[in-house]
Length: 425
Ligand code: FIX
Ligand code: ZN
Figure 1: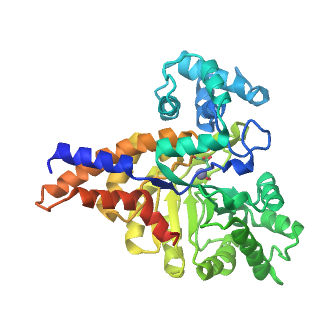
Figure 2: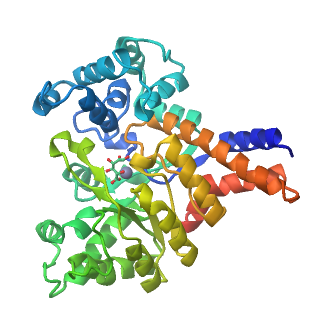
Figure 3: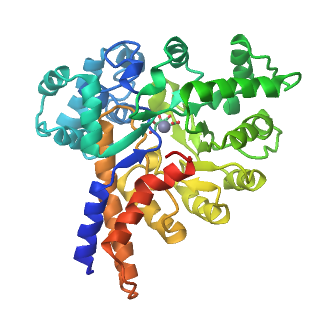
């Protein structure tokens, strides 16, 4: 196959391969849908345009000295969207990745990306039924399974699960038990668990280990969770030089339980939260983290499987090298501030060169349903470019590369490696 043929085979294979999206913040419509105040499924043009990435970007153009944060947060969702649309799309060119993503999304839905007013788009979305819209978006994006992020320490989410046992039954969605406070703020986690009737103590005395594992076990069962996840700060170490509680939570509570249940543990490392608290979700930042923590965990817990992504560009090469040392480490995604074409290309090229087909190139991290359309469209085109280049290099050695080889690899990259790692069917 020559370069042109290879590129078209790769492009077709990527387009036709259904994707299992292993980390998103999208919810099944069973959790309620916006604009219902308590609805957790976010969808529609106003949610898209007020994505926290765009809130951060509009505050670079209209600073807080002009529009105080509290005034912005007091505006209606539509007014916030109009403000962002005016400043980032009408008065400036929408060249950023998050801006371009809105326009790709609008186009993929068959609407006019050149439409200068949000009103027409609002009218179209108002005629959509959220549940059917989920099917339509998954079909257009060619995503066959959406993995949720189910934060058990979030009151709204926990109450929903406790009040509705059918919540986890939507076959299009899989649940993930997200437990950040247990590793980022143990005293707070102990307070919450104790208030829910679990006999845990900050000093780990008494029945703390058993009771914390009972808590985790109950929620893993209730959610039918396919893995457990946390986001960790750049200062995360294992073991922690200061003997942080996270050492004992990992060693005595979480990892033995997950090994026994055969479930992976996902660590998303490098998020420095709320450096600008007034921006809320838009106020988080990235930071270089300690790869040795990942290597030590993989080494000390060979019966556990670790899904890991890191937020700092500077950590990516070391993470690939660590993955070469431990088969129980699966590297995934170009997370958050790395989910941009220039960095997806750089990181994916590096990963193919060091890890071959044994990694998961991307997850969407979508917060709003329709973001699946742009996040996967943009990623597929970068993957096509990088894979075509790598296969052309391989073909140049005289290796008899076949289209079926490429299809098999693409299936691994976009679906089967993850399914095999979580042991799901
Ligand atoms: O911790 C996480 O799951 C992060 O992905 C989010 O907190 C973050 O806001 C996000 O959505 C990034 O894309
Ligand atoms: Zn996320």
